[in-house]
Image (cartoon, rainbow, N blue to C red; front, side):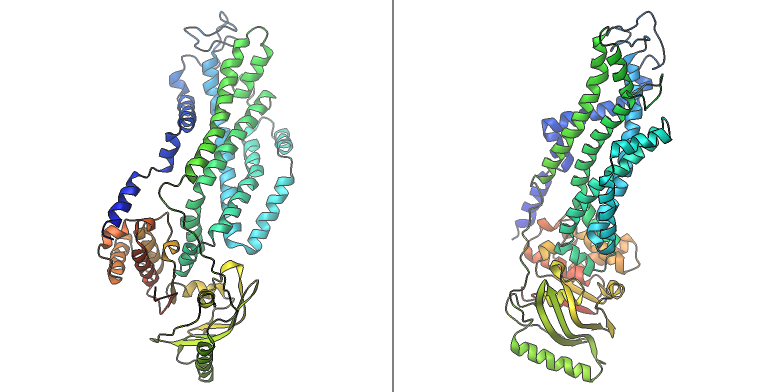
Length: 503
């Protein structure tokens, strides 16, 4: 056990990041190198090029490459290298505009639909279906007919029309991620929904967003160049990649070389973006550092929430609490029934007084965990509470999301029986504990770090500072369990629910 932290730390040190894994692949290194070189040369065109894109050298019309003009000249003697690089600026701007709109709409709507669900999911899904039904190119041409030569409006429109594809992909992934136990743990810790989406779900979607963005950028380059080829982009004499290809096609019989410097960069750019997307996808799925954790099937196997004897005792105690108007009960559960497709917990009643310890005893799969999560409004598997009340300090939490937001973390905290999957694998232990502390206590980062060290000491972590810097996969099962307990204590809760405390 003493060797485990050092071994885990050495493995983590050897595990390269996503960018390193991309560059390790020849296709990724070449594609990324070409895109970086093209971007730098385009932005620094004024320093790279000797001639302005509008300067004419009528003594060298349709000339091939030579000293003064490395890529040759066009039909008016204008330097092709200069026109290629200056024309690339409009292409980069078009990609930036369309990609910005694409990401803003796609990421925000996909996250909201997948995590929040309900009417937001319905509205986003229906809107995406509507946009999918629209012919994108025709809509862009209509925009250009209304705003002649305005590529900014055209690219923004194309970004809007392309965003439903990203929305659907991210919604689908978010639906799966939100069922992870570490997301439930973040909810139990009292984090806001915006915090959970931004810090615990969005990082898991980063590789998907990058892949989809690179593929969409390739499409934008083709569309922008196609509009320039049709004369709907930058108007002569201003250069554009599509306009250069159009000029080359008109002079192909007299100067076939023109197609090389005008068409090859366009083809290479589209190929580089497409290949880069594939490489990032492969690199992101490569299992280097964080092992994939199997989720246990938590579906209850019987309809009884407790054994007969425990249920009878709990029922009797709950009835006494009801008769006494629950004046001494911190938590009172009355006739709680939960269904996950079919009924899995039926009419469970018990109460917990301040300073009291109550145990639910029953066979594996009888519904103890479902009951515990039901108290916090986190029924797994899309289930719901069909009957009963959950009174905490006299407030019914059933069907009251506002009340649950105030109670989670500070009123009621939860310790999962599976600590490794209750912790976010993308953040260090210290970051997760600091986030919970600052959520519930008005303090700065320094004070929060001191509180984190105190929490880790409370659960007998021998090296609080060292453990705070590690990631969940670098901890043993026992240490991860202690961290989960510290996370539950971060909000100084009045009631602590421990699932399978004997483990």
